[in-house]
Amino acid sequence: MDQDTTVPKLNFGYWLDKAIEWGQATTLESQKDVCLHLPQLQEFLHQLYETIKHSSSTVAIQQFPLIGQLLGRLCWNPFVIGYDESQKTLMWCLCCLYSSEPQSTVELKANSWIRSLLCHLLSSSKWESNEAETSTFVSALGYTSADYYCHLVKNMVISLVTELRENQFNGLNIQGSISASRVNAVSIFCVPLITLPDLTPLLETLLLYHGGSSKEILSSEFLEAVNEAFLKKKISLPESAVFSLWLRHLPSLEKATLHLLDQLFSVQLNSLEEVACVMKDSLLPQAASHPAIFRIVNEIFKNALMETDGTSGVMTIIQVFTQLFLQAHQNENKQHKFPLKAYFPFHHQPLVRGLVRRPSELPTSYWSQHLKHISDMLKALVEDTNVSSLTDLFEIWFLVACFGEWLDIAAEQLLKAAVEPDAVLWLLAFYYCPKNENQRRTQTMVEAQAVYSHLMMLFSCTDLSLKDLEAAVHRITGIEQCWNQCLTTHLLTNFLLFSHGGHKIAQECIYHITKTTDTSKEVYNLLIRTAYRFNRSGEENQRTVKLLNELLQKLTLKV
Image 1 (cartoon, helix red, strand yellow):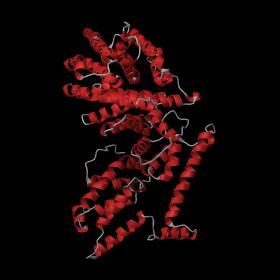
Image 2 (tube, one colour):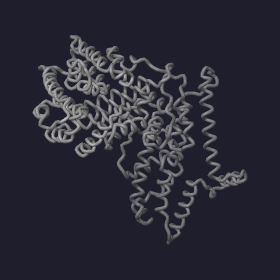
Image 3 (tube, rainbow, N blue to C red):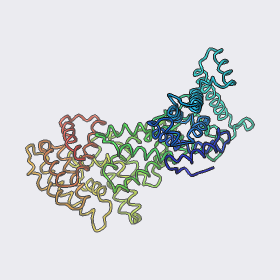
Image 4 (cartoon, rainbow, N blue to C red):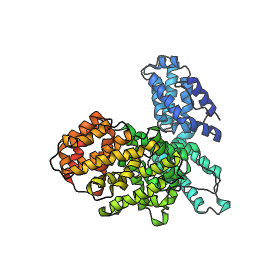
């Protein structure tokens, strides 16, 4: 079978040779080859139509002398005409060849031939005697031709579904079991018909079918085609079928995850509610309740974060996904729930348990104590002499970063509640500066403590001006290291949100900071995370929510 699927557009000779080679796709080998090339063939047919649609039939035939032979062969290939929009495109191409005013016997014959092919494609086959008999028989039953073929497809699907399900329940009955090759052949047969609504029960049954073989029995072309149709919203499948698809075919899971990231990056989303909605619609957070899926998706997110050099937008996406995953995991029936170690097998389990505790599960009065507990465990891990490699350190950092809601609460608690500042500041310093080479994290702590002390002196003031915050702002605008800048910006932004005096100068202060530093995206992502948390937790602070919305509207234009 020809595995080369890289074909130049409008390579007419190539596709004619393929059409001749395939015939009517009666062998399993030819069926596999047709399925492998269907997407590119459809693209070629669309390009062909775009090329000839404004030409007369004579010009089209002069440009492509063998176009009739190509279209005629493809019209009789059931896999081609059953695939997506190929049948419609074939009909468009045939209509371009039809002579509205035939001038010769040749054109008259060509028109007749085209009408015959169109009739065949429309399933109104009155021009061939044996099919005419079928048409008469169908009419005698009281069906139209369209009704007959619709019922035929439905009955075929019901028959195959019944056969597969009975075999699944009677798997120990060796004599009556279906062979793996039979199931594989059924999956190949489905490839060109995947977008037919009547086929959905069969797709679901195949995806949930597991025979006795340890190897995958469904064809990879089938699995890829189902995944592609699902991602493009051409078909709708139950969650269980989609999860089974991703579990049995790793490339489909990888493609679904990258497709989600593309969606989130290509559209301007103004709130994390919108981000969460897109994520839930993808079914990936729900599917991540299975540890194998979670670890693969998490690894792809981790690579995306490294490739974008730790962009705050990517980190925010990962944090929202983690929150949605936790919701789905906690909603799982206890009998089907996997232990946390299955998701984080190589991490310190007490730290995992501490991070997984959602803030909404704890009284707000206990948050500061919980944050100190997380900080103490983390510090002991990081300062352990066994954690010597940067890889180990990165893995610990990434685990903490995934649960960023606790980090945002840490910065908020520093200002609003009685906390042990050193432990919480260390937690934030580790997040923004995990490596302590040349005392970088130590320097970050010094900067953060200075800004924190200054802000705490002003927190109770109700009448503030930008000049009162000059020292803190100067520390941000004068800092060269981005990690120090991000941490101090985080503290100052929270001060503006949660102090009475800060509300009055918030817009002016943030405008000044984002104008003189490259922190617009950092501040924007912090604000949308805070708004998202407020909306989910039901915190009633109308002044803060109003301020958040005003600041987000201003910053949206900058990011």
